Length: 103
Image (cartoon, rainbow, N blue to C red; front, side, top):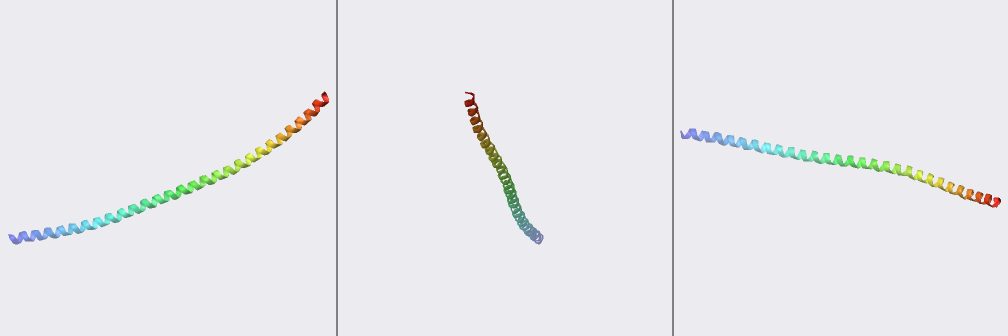
């Protein structure tokens, strides 16, 4: 009877050892998967940052182009305003001359 119990204890110890070994393998596998997850998460974050920077550069480029167009438009408007002021001065001179003749 004692030998049977000893054999049962040995069998249980072998099973415990096998379970501990399997647990160690599973922990190692989990650790590896967890590291891969962290790496992929960082890769995703980096990719999103690069995409955001690229989008920001595109927005800035478009704003710069729009600003150039607005500067050209403003320069044209200032030129038109200057022409109108010169015409106004000439018109006032002409009007003063006409008024003087009428008097």
